[in-house]
Length: 419
Image (cartoon, rainbow, N blue to C red; front, side, top):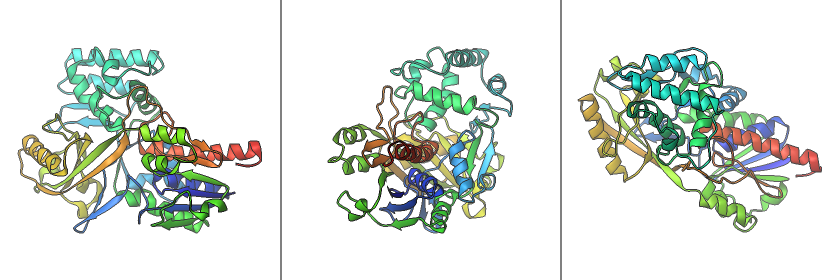
């Protein structure tokens, strides 16, 4: 079985590793000079930063399995803590290490600065969602789903979870997808809701090890190679997997599969900005967690701040990463607003390092969204976080899509004697 994979992001790497494990002859082409796609490392004045600060959770079973497959140890590379959404003043909530739903119950009952009205409104909603099997009409938004939940519970839990998981504000985000994320995170078993925060840059978290594993197992990996449908190498393979971003996949399929191309092209996208700053000495020593939730509004847009020194060690000492999901505005405007926000929250002056904006970081996860299938045309397939599936645009969605497309190709081959 000769397989050509176009795109070396996390979905493409997942597909390549899974196909190579089956004994297929895999060729992976990546247009950039590095692997990782929209989850990669960047360099700035001697610092190894990332194009976006990512959070994994314990329920990311496919991602963790892929890391182990290529020889990585998630326990060493990821800082694990229970779901913690604390603010700098200590308000917010932390879920203890208890089986569901007792972890949610205990976390909500112990949430600091919550009134009984806040606790009761959230627990009643959670109980209702569980009784309904975490399902709802596809046209609902998260804000509509959460009618009756108090303003404090929305601000401290629902909205941070929604924007971090779906990169879409609650008033526009798909309630059906949000409920699926909640189900798999909070009710998937022990540790499913735990936060896994990278202790290394994104290149070291998967792409470099995956590249080495693929080469060691006979796959061909070519960087700086931009593929087109006229490329002669397409005829030398039994199947093609487009693991590139949806706008690129739409362009490449215009002639061969116009209906599929139109679906991919119709997706709209949201940006994520990461503002890196250097904090004054001693600022983070009293932090209850290496990740804090921030009170946010249009004038103060960052939802989370990460202490990379705590996570990654001395070479990232005093480096903070401030994440603005669903960001809007210019780089200069976003950075200025975040710097003002940090001064207001911490009463301290910080030094900006750089601001990285991934302009099309994720698709907009809105109600009733129709996503392209993994099957494009005979012999042509697709994988990526945007392909039809239960999850929003996450690392787990990308990795799972890469595994599932290989399973689909294998089933087609077995059922028809060919791809």
